Image (cartoon, rainbow, N blue to C red; front, side):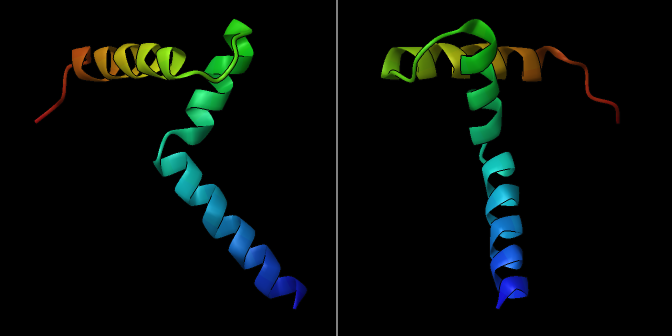
Length: 58
């Protein structure tokens, strides 16, 4: 039963990372802000701007 629980926790952690939930939580912690719709929009704008400004190879 413990193995199944650990598997479930691992899957949830992977999904949170893929959905940028962990990145948003880190953003809140680093900047000392609280979770609001405005802050989430700010995070998304910064995140996507940084992501798409980097050059892609091939």
